[in-house]
Amino acid sequence: MPQLFHRSANAAARMSLLAVALLATLGLTAVFGVVRAPNFTNQFQVRDQPIQFSHKHHVGDDGIDCRYCHTSVETSSYAGIPPTKTCMNCHSVLYNSVGYLAPVRESYSTDKSIEWVKVHRLADYVYFNHSIHVNKGIGCSTCHGQVNQMPLMFQANTLQMSWCLDCHRDPAKNLREKKDIFNMNWKPGPDQEEKGKQLQAFYNIRSVRDLTSCSTCHR
Image (tube, rainbow, N blue to C red; front, top):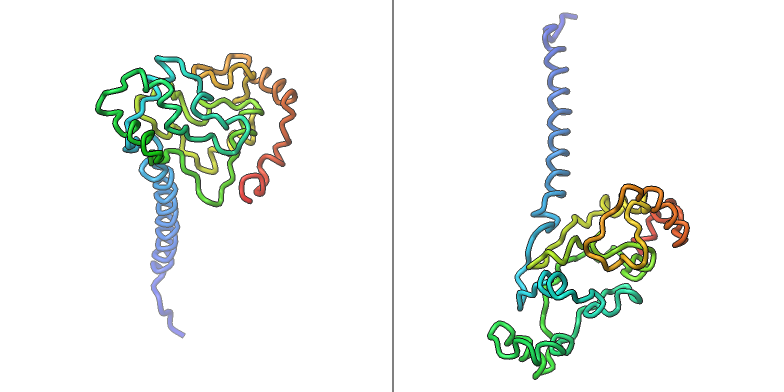
């Protein structure tokens, strides 16, 4: 039987297979790059709010503790959004007639909540508990960034699964003493590896197997 294809067809077939594999690799790389891009994760994206509340002013300049507004962060899965009355504790006296705080005064007088736009939004199938992280030595700035330097609030980290798992696989690198949980300027020191291991035992942190179990975050 005569040969149907020239010998060069073998090389062409190999090149075709190589091209398909290369295109598939480039395609997957592009997809993974897109899903990690800030426009997809909302990282560093500032949201328009009913009032352009400045954490830099309140936390950084005035030194207000996180817990003054986020009252349930130590006891609940939800950090809590402060009621307008919390704002009026100060602004019934300070800046009580400026125009940009009119929505605060209106909210207080009408007993209608201000509709803040959520900045840190996780998927509905993800369970996150603020209190367990705070009580096990994870400070606010580890996840939220240096809020005391943010004139307008933005999402400092990707909040993607890989980012969470990086910490769950090695929590010691982020553990702090209780006194530093709400310290926005905390940075790990040169002895963090050793100190983190000690705190890991002190806080009775569960095993990496438990921390990375699917049911820990997906319930």
